[in-house]
Structure formats: C-alpha cells, structure tokens
Image 1 (cartoon, rainbow, N blue to C red):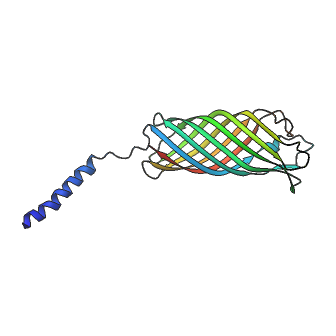
Image 2: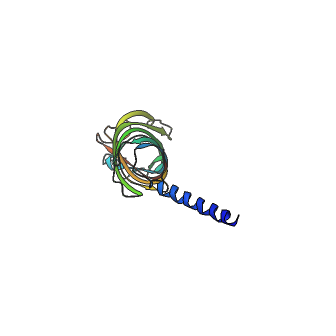
Image 3: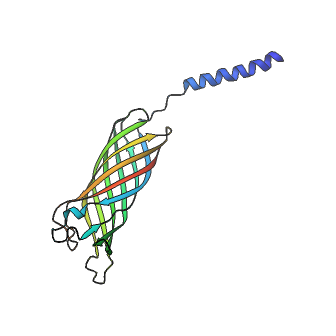
Length: 206
C-alpha cells in the first residue's frame, strides 16, 4: 500500500512533466483573426491651414477618440485590418472664449499593417485609405458653420503591440490622418489638413 501511495504522485508528476514538454511555446506572431478597441484623444491641425485673416483668432481644441478594429494576421510581419475611428467634441473657439461650433468625425479605413515581431513586443507601421464623415454643429445664431459631409482620408499609424498572454495584448498608437479637400463654408485653404489621434487599446487574438 505504501509503495502504491508513493507511485501515484510520481506517476502524476511524470505525466505532467511530459505534458508540459509537449506543449509548444506561445506563438505571438501566428496567423489568425483579432479584434480590438481603444480610446484616446484627437488633436486637429486644421488651425494651421486657416487663411491669414482668421489664423490666431479661431482655435480647434482636441476631442476624445474611440476606435474599434478587426483584422487578420496573414504572416508574422503582415496583417490586414478594418478600422472605425471617431473623434468627438472637438470645439472651434473664437478668441479662446466663445464656442462657434463643435466638430465630430467618423472615419472608416482599410489598413495594411507591417509588423516587426520581437518576442512579446511587436512595433508596427500601418497605412490605409478610407472615408471620413465630418459633422460641424454651429453654436451661434447664424448656423453658417453647420456642415455634414464625406471626404477621402488617408490614415497612417505608428504603434506597439505588447502581448500579455498568447491571446491578449495591449497597444499604444500615434496616428495622423489626412484629408485632401476644403470644408467649404468652414474657413480653410484648399489643401490637406491633419487629425492626429493618440491612444491606447486592448486586443484579443483568436
């Protein structure tokens, strides 16, 4: 009986050791699907493209940002991704006091993601074309700044994916997106303007 009691834990330990040895090391760079969400801030640079007569008078304040993304990692270094990104509550102020309008943007982008897999840390560069829906809500009595329109946008991003487990990761991202059209009744030059989002998020890899 005593030999049996000794043999049972030894056998269990041997089987566990064999099982652990058979388990593969985590593959953080494997192909597969992923989903993620993120939050941050959106900083508009439209102010730099205003005509000289209103530059310094009109200011564009940052807003809150949110993004949701889903994609497929094709290889260890390449993925494709669909992204929604919204920037909400970016106020347009006159002389730093009165709110003239509030801008919200909704961007829908198809991305190509280039990845440098280094163990658990994967720096990446991402670029993708898409469409941006901009909404300006006029806060004055004249309603001259009311605007709703779609425009082409090009979004680039520099970021880092950091794996916590084989399935869960967190990411940091710096992403400027550029429009290539004048807003029309919103004072701006016929040139591109930049909306920079800085954010952090979490992703799940299947």
